[in-house]
Length: 610
Image 1 (tube, helix red, strand yellow):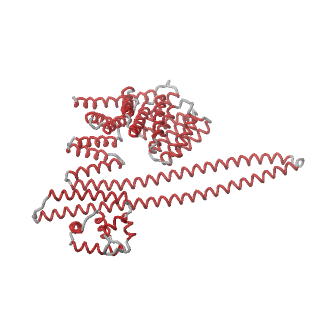
Image 2 (spheres, helix red, strand yellow):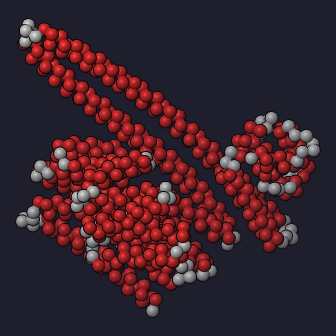
Image 3 (cartoon, rainbow, N blue to C red):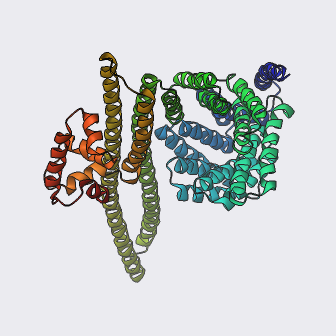
């Protein structure tokens, strides 16, 4: 019976996608109607632009929006031209093309000023806030969002209101502000309902469900838990109620969310969870760029299989998730790292050490790639924010100059008129010359302020670059410590394998089960120490070198790490394949390098060091 249910699900979802295609095709067909009104035509272009943007089809979104720009220009419709420029700026911002989104913000401001329409100004404030949000300048973004809201508060611009409320919800979610998260998620739902945009409403429902999870986790009230699933059901129901008006990606995310909530709060309902996951998979596979959603589904299925002790399915689902993520360009590294870690752990648990080592190495490689990617993104974001702030300062300076120039022109005209009557009104002429002198002094003071402002900007830029360099240095040290700790782990594993190989070749008797138990205990100790070295004491090796009175060699650092792990002389000798006497000599030499007397315990000394 359950199999029939899954089959029915997979059959119905392509029909839903076909309905969505029919809906979009119907909109395009309306555009070909020669009797269509311009207002309706503009609305259709806006709907198509937003639909393709939310489905990450940025080229198609840009193509539709360019048609909107051309139409608004031909109609001399400055309000809708401003909106179109703002839509294009948001598209480029989503793609992290910060130079282009700034260009469209400037264009939108010029047209909004020309239109003398306050709603147009609200849209430019919205784009400015979106840009500040992407720079992670959240306080400035909130000010711009609130400024836009104050303009459209008593208008019917419900679509823009819902967008602003949704972004405010996102900011306060990052700040773990439960009250404001719940407030703005609720407001987003109300405005989205009035706007008529079903995809936006489905996203707003998903946001409100998240807000209820925060409230439930904080207060553990049953009514909040019920609300989570009730709201998720409403988001999913929109797809069936308004055929084609909810994007496939939005629907897939809503299905994934409800599956995640069942998995989190009702893990015993495995059949229901699987049903939701398979429906999510079917929806996500119907459109492009949904690899992360698909991989997340496989990840949950692997966890369910592990709970059911179906080892073959665990590996199969994790491998499917890994293969799916490889098809994405660029690869979403956060999810890839979690999948590789899960595979490494599973193979290690099943004594498949070669595969475990392979995926552990992939985890390290992808972690390094993520670090480099985030470093580049941070630099790009900081540069964009600097250019944005610099541009804003230039705009302020230009406005002051324009105002001064206007005053100078008025003053010059006044002086010219007074010059005609100079012979009759000498006193008046002297009076206006004095005013001119004062205005000149004010102009010089303004120019001086401009120079000081430029110097201040240069000083701030140097400080920013210095701070960024310091951050990069600290991050590199942390990565080096992690690599060192992993190197010790891998080397220890290789040496254990070598010892086992030698005993097997020499046909020596050995207790495999005892060796594996010892390795497991040692692995657990090593993982705890590795966590302390990497997370609690990230400067472990640096602080050792600073504490030593003589320079420590790489071998010295390795001995210090093994001693920190709690290994005794015999364990270290077996691990390094040397005589215990050699280990004792090395410990004595380390005591000398740390300036310790013979009575001080070296292992005890190393732990207070960190």
